[in-house]
Amino acid sequence: MTLPANVTTGVWTLDNSHSEIGFTVRHAGISKVRGQFTEAEATLELGSSLADSKVAATIQTASFDSGDANRDGHVKGEDFFDVEKFPEITFVSRHVKANGDSFDLVGDLTIKGVSKEVTIETEFNGVAVDPFGNTRAGVSGETTISRKDFGLTWNAVLEAGGVLVSDKVVINLELAFIAPAA
Image (cartoon, rainbow, N blue to C red):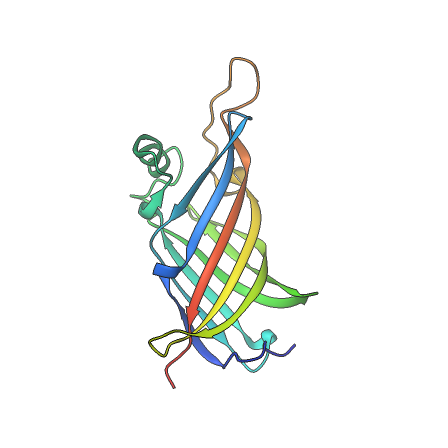
């Protein structure tokens, strides 16, 4: 599998200020709540082919933001991320494989000390040179995980039945990487 056109080999770095690492989870069975992590580092190490390429990412759990201070405090606490004990979420790729016009990024996601293999369906959004001379590449991705698989089991039973927070969490990625300096 060859690299997309205009993509050079080397270590590309995440441009955190032009990226979003977000999620969506069903709340009370009737609405979706969205949130994001605002502090992350990632590298995209591109070899001569996709098979020779790797991704590694570290997300700071304390940077969790859903737009509601009370909810954010609860999610950062022991019931969910326990940011004092588990300050980071990590992802380390195992391999990348083509899937039609998209790519499947397979790797180990670690949350609260629990690692599980996940597949992130990704789409390459192209390459552009910004006004400052930086070469950038854009990638979108999505995967769905089970909270329970990572020890995120807190919940509350609703009076009418069901639970407050769904087990299914959709992770959404909109990432910009900057090419290595020439």
